[in-house]
Length: 87
Image 1 (cartoon, one colour):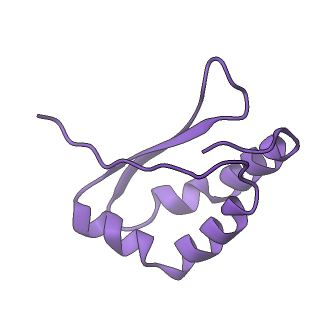
Image 2: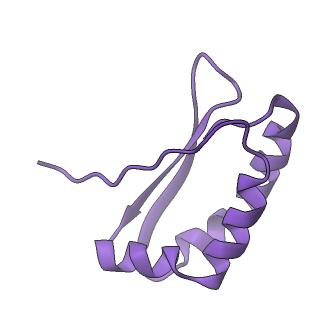
């Protein structure tokens, strides 16, 4: 996620306020916030879920909708997302 520079601290505060709720969401095993080493306006959230079904349930939740609405208002570029698994 790429943020307007003036929104970086706002986003970090938003994430701090919701990370425990994300971690406590059914099926979430871990969530982390990572920052790009070259561009201080680029962040990644990295989460581990028990299953794709649990992740999709989170993505369909009112909590996700509310948090995403607040987060996307801070972007300076289109976000990208990937779902990964071990080979």
